Length: 284
Ligand code: A2P
Image (cartoon, rainbow, N blue to C red; front, side, top):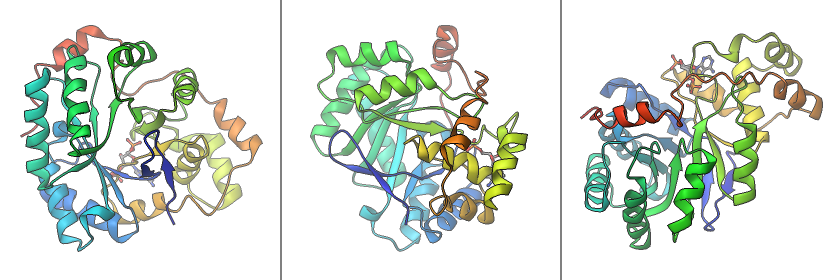
């Protein structure tokens, strides 16, 4: 029921996944993952920084699904740079998840030293330990710099994207490169977000769906991968039901016009923040 999109290496990725950013305890993490898998999700997005990889792995094992039936993404935190350190950090992620391989591993932010990390990830990819490698929060110039020396092209760029921060230019660039646009905080992160927007709610009423479903559907029709986070069973199910209705061109345009250039997260061009983030160890 949930479609899969082709990646530039011939593999596929389920277009909808469950995000678990800021889910910081075992019970909530395991429940959310189990509810999502029971509702038909086959894609979970975690990160070393979130500190919940262990519980994600446990929930997947306890679901009774086969390992190969679930697409799992994790991310390399900003303090892990250099070839050997990146390999060790990847192994730590794998051990926490309790897996033999990972479906996708991303460089979480373009913090200094990412070139060496990419080299390590390419080797892990070639060795079959990671099925797909990509980046997160990279701007065009950072991707161009990475790809100058890369031997493997990133399959995705996971970036903040929602109706008030649409990333139109980067979206168009990624399209020219065959790199899929993956949206984090697709609903706008729960604060200052478009769930309360009048235009969104009018479209939702016309389709007899929720504002969240309209927003997620808009992402899907832009050919993005979406990873909405929720720890509520009913919302997890609601967020899955976005493939049985469609927005027309006029509705897509109305949402396109809501772009306000308003980030909820850090700016990947903020070099001071990137450097500072390398002192955060992430949750253990
Ligand atoms: P909760 O986890 O309490 O359900 P994003 O992924 O864009 O960052 O959005 C996550 C935020 O949106 C969380 O605060 C989450 O809250 C909330 N959320 C997720 N799905 C829905 C939904 N279907 N309706 C309303 N709020 C939602």
